[in-house]
Image (cartoon, rainbow, N blue to C red):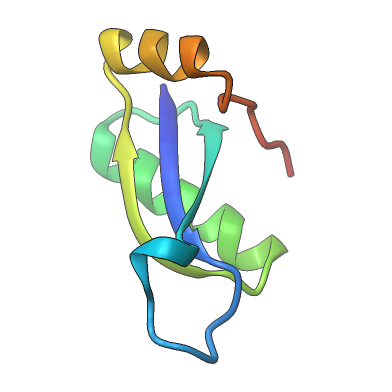
Length: 76
């Protein structure tokens, strides 16, 4: 399942909508909860990002993200 991770590039400042970024991870997990946990662990282990929110993408949402041109899977 593809997960969208919303994050701030630094933990030094309070989160602001204008500086929120997103990345996409393909996580193979038995359920949504485990997928969120694995996504958080991957991002925390490989970056200094301040994670705001992690959400799984439905097929329709994934199709929209691909059409918008912002979709690119991140691999660690």
